[in-house]
Length: 80
Image 1 (tube, helix red, strand yellow):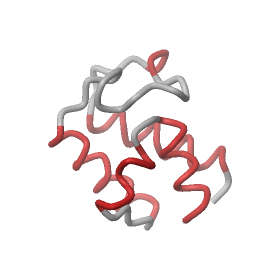
Image 2 (image 1 turned 30 degrees about the vertical axis):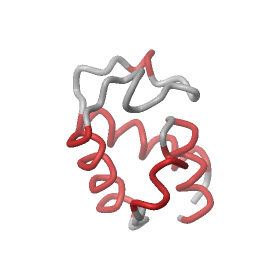
Image 3 (image 1 turned 45 degrees about the horizontal axis):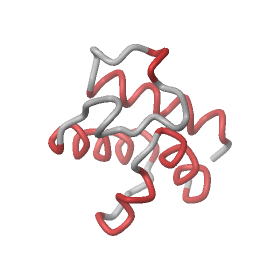
């Protein structure tokens, strides 16, 4: 998956799971749980949404790697 496609998929998934998050808050180093204030249920829904829309399954052991917007984009780029 190309980086641009991955970034669009992440932005779309975040807007579905957390519609209150402003697009301006989606800078690369933004931490999903702390900066975007996603609780654990929102985070799990985000991972499920990403899996459904991109076909990339993110196992629990890889959650630390996808803790930021850029981390999630890079993960999708490397696995998609």
